Length: 550
Image (cartoon, rainbow, N blue to C red):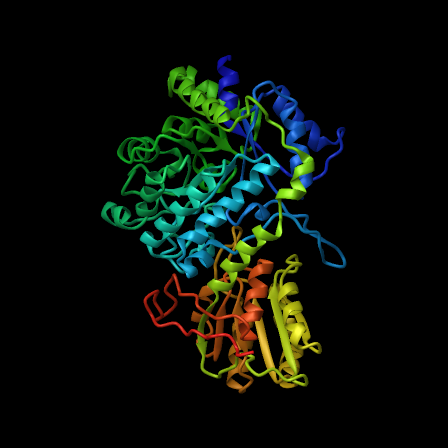
């Protein structure tokens, strides 16, 4: 390989898993990146299972050296490989298994379930042509105001996080897929979203050793194959003020030498403001390679990124031997994945492997066992359903969240066929207040499902103030609403007067069904809080409920 070809092995753009015709601009771009720039891999994003598999097969046929394919499979292959929803009917088009968020696993505290999630994720992901999962998240969510990690973390106990992460890694890697611990050395204690700005975590090295680094050490002991870097500053590790992705002290001195990690180091997305704002794309590229990164994902400009890596050698920022070491590591991984023998997947086998009932059963068990009941002072669980009971289900979510409330309401409607439902856009609650208050006045039971308050593009984790005001007024007027947190679990801190508060941890269909069955007292409530919410700590006594006698 030429130096430029070796540099290209380190650059992995992003491709959607959607349908594209051969002469579409989107496909022509991908074709140029593969045949002309000769990139070493890709990060595949959203699409249906069959479209992802077919597209990746077509991409693999374009190049002599096979591509490594990574994907954000934090919550299973279904986190990326689902067919979406057909509008305007909101028909669920199905796909791979979508698990609840990692914090749901934290609420079960079950390492066997973490292993099973890894196993299912690997089997389904490999059937689609994906080789590397950018998971698990090993960030300790020690800051309730964290807008980007939140329920993506297992919780705030670093030792629990380490045990669950290690089990997930073993389940994944023992079934043919590489795991990626992220975001090293820890994105948990920040109130800044690194997609949007540069976080700074000003804690001591001793605190990092006892908290942030603990799950990463457990992952290395479990043999994790890759690590993804954190676009944030930790002065205790590097006093120069550069983010970890661009710091030799973090990626080489700490991760490689002190902690003994010998796998692949993958940058977080190189189009994020956490690395771009200080240095710009090309300088950030050179600094990341000099720091020790093997792979740069999601660059702003593929060709310019490859050129920048080559320029770094000419500028004596690093040697060609340093590039050679990375390329040997990546080629060895391609061979380990069997890509030298067979780089394509069998399309006829996708439907036999992906989204099967046995795989969904694992996700359902995690969801069922994760439900946490923090408050039930009004004894509002629907223990004694009567056909004439007037039940109102209010869903508060983003307008684009077509899945919000769908599975939850369908499950409630089994028992309450006259269930009334109202969808309220999270960004326009004020305009719906009069209608909501009138509806609650005519209902015997009001259930409020909240899907708001966290997400990768969030600036803050708090619920909108009009939502908080509505819940508090409903409680004050004696309407005793039941609040179910499908989004930010810390919501209780904003609405402490609510009489009944249930946490489902995610808006995944399996979590919605589990929450409904828990309210209907059809499954036991056994989850344990993995985070601190107000005065309730992970060690606090949490309400448990057995199922209703049948």
